[in-house]
Length: 236
Image 1 (cartoon, one colour):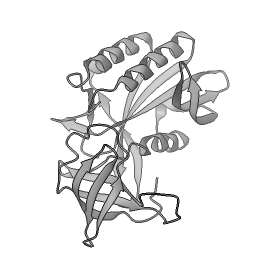
Image 2 (cartoon, rainbow, N blue to C red):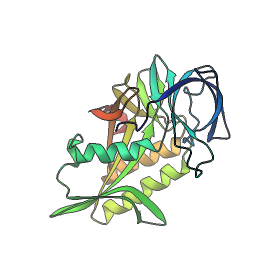
Image 3 (spheres, rainbow, N blue to C red):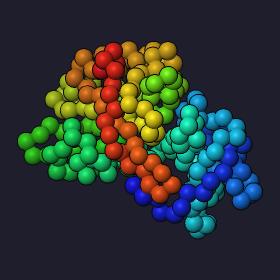
C-alpha cells in the first residue's frame, strides 16, 4: 500500500478523547489530527514522540485534514492507524503473500454475519468452504513480543464467539493479527490486560478457529505485509 501523498513529520503533543491528537509539525505548525485508534495505545502515545501524518485534500468534507499514521517508539516507527490493516490484508491476499489464504476466487469486505456483526473479509472459492477473516491491529510491544489487545475488548471477544459459530456451521474462520512494526518476530496474547479475550481465543482455537500473525515493512512511502510472525505455542 503506497501513500497517496508524502507523510509529514512532526512530534506528538498529546493524544486525547481517543480519536484526537495534538501535533506540532516540523514546520512549526500546530495541528489537531484524527487518531483512528480506539485502543489504549500503550507505549505509542508518549508526548514528544516523533510522528508521521497524512494530509487530506481540503474538499470541505473533512473536519480534520490530518491523520496520525506512525508513532516512533522502541527505536522504530509503529503504525497506529487501525483502518489500515484490513486494506493491508486484502492487498496481501490478492498478492498471495498470505500462504494460508491462497486459492479463493472472490473477496468481499464488511459482510454482515452472525448476530449483528460484520466480518472484515469474506473469501469464497469453488469447492472451498467460505472463509471468514477477522483482522486485528497489533501494536503493543512488551519485552520481545507484539501483543493484542492493549485494552479490554468486549467487541473482540464477541467476534471470536461469532467465528466459533461459523466453524460449527461448516465454514472456515481465521483471525489475522497485523503488526504494523518491523522490530518483532513473535506474537502473544496480552492475557493480563484482557483475560476474557485470551481465554476465549484459547477456546476458539480448540474449536477450529485459525490464528495467524503477519508483520509489515513500512517507510515514508508505503506500508506492506511482508512476513509471517510466530505465534507462541501457549497462544495458538
